[in-house]
Amino acid sequence: MGRISVETRMRNEEAIRAAMDGLLRGELPPGGKCDLKTLATEAGVTRTAFYPKKARDGSERPGPYQHLAEEFERRLKGLQDVGTVLDPRAAQIERLKAANVELKKRIEDRDAELEKLTAFKQLALSRIAAQHLEIERLRAQAAAGNVRSIPTKLGGSATIGSRN
Image (cartoon, one colour):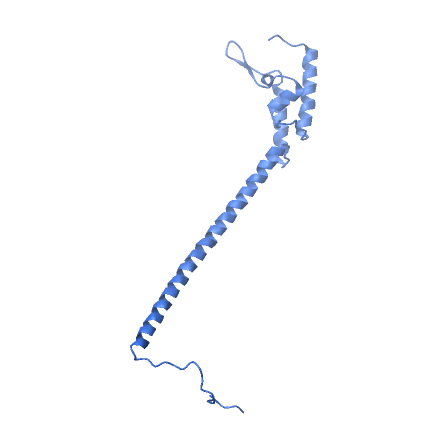
């Protein structure tokens, strides 16, 4: 690829800066993110211009717009550090992560409650079974004749206690 003229480079840098400002204001194109790929697409330059180049002798030289890529990354990190979320998808991901944490907590709480209720049910069933066995024992004892039954109704004129 041949060299570009100074004028073309200046136009490209202006386009990159304009695209950078737009992206950092949150003006993302449909399907785009706040990243170098979208920056290159919006500015109309190749993405490889943002990265260092290797010379034939193996040494590295900076890409033509590498300094702008570094500025973009620095500004983006600064905005992220103060809590600004530029990418609506990133904001959605953060909301979903928070919702996921909340749902996991609710599931843990419900599992703990279910465990308590299961233990209570087991205890209640054990007590009911013990009471049933006691009732069966008492009925068997009554059937054997060694227990007197208590009348369930009082006789017609019998009173218990006195009224004053």
